[in-house]
Image (cartoon, rainbow, N blue to C red):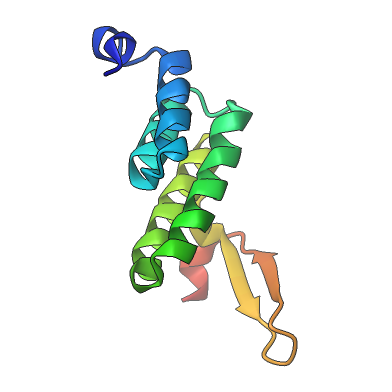
Amino acid sequence: CFPAVELDPHYIRALLRRAELYEKTEKLDEALEDYKAVLEKDPSVHQAREACMVSLNLSVRKKPRVHHLQICKLKDLGNLVLRPFGLSTENFQVKQDSSTGSYSINFVQNPNNNR
């Protein structure tokens, strides 16, 4: 279906186009995999980062029973983006305010020391 990707799996533009096609045909898991592949090759591709967030959001809404799996994928994506800066999702602590339902995110310098 996408000979450019088959010929050169590192061809970012072809991966992005295939991911867009997957999104349009509601193959969100496949789209997410392509966007993640793009980010592994070039973490600066804004379109891939933004699309991953949208894909995950849509996927979570369509499949609430796999919410935990989607959160894991989101953490993997976050770690992929944060890794070049020497960070991971473990460096961020998320707390929900029970009265408003809103979230606060705090940076934790040494996450392993706080456990």
